[in-house]
Length: 244
Image 1 (cartoon, rainbow, N blue to C red):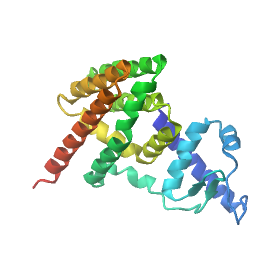
Image 2 (image 1 turned 90 degrees about the horizontal axis):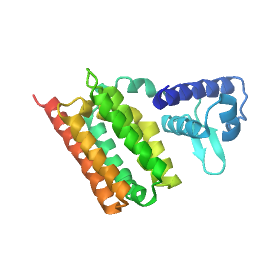
Image 3 (image 1 turned 45 degrees about the vertical axis):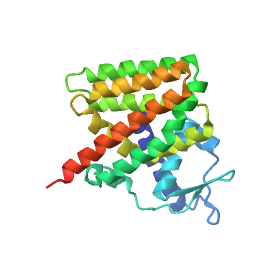
Image 4 (image 1 turned 180 degrees about the horizontal axis):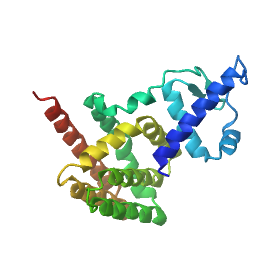
């Protein structure tokens, strides 16, 4: 099952649990604190990383507040569920996609530089495997935009992991967890453009080649170019869509 779908299902499961606990007065009315992360992960049968991503999503949606060293606290068991609105993300302003890409540039450029200095051989192997799968997706009869977007996303996550900075990983996970649909939408839209898939593969190869060479400056430059290129194309698509 794709990671995004697993996370979405876990978010729904946690929402239901929060509301049931509230109705049953199973939560201390004063503190309204969820069980410890380790216990919750075991009871739900999921990894702690996946649970953490789902809880970050629920925090963004207004259900929870995650307090450092204290745990997760329920602040509104019946917070408005804007996740249903994300189903109609194509109706949301294109400007939001541009904001997401700008945010990605701030986060991912320095991460690429760190990955070049800290990557391990097995991480480099996984990056190359992602590129191979990205190429295979583009060779499918329908162009494989959706599948290609998934491998694109996994490649960027491998680069983040190779930086070996838990705070940056947490920041990236938070960005992905709350903005996954926007990021996925931007990838699918770009990969559906004529000639764009081969361009994306070339840009990703340059990033990974720089990481393999241990060249931090080159890796940052390649990542910046890749994201700025995508950002410029999204701006053009947005302008074309809004033109009379």
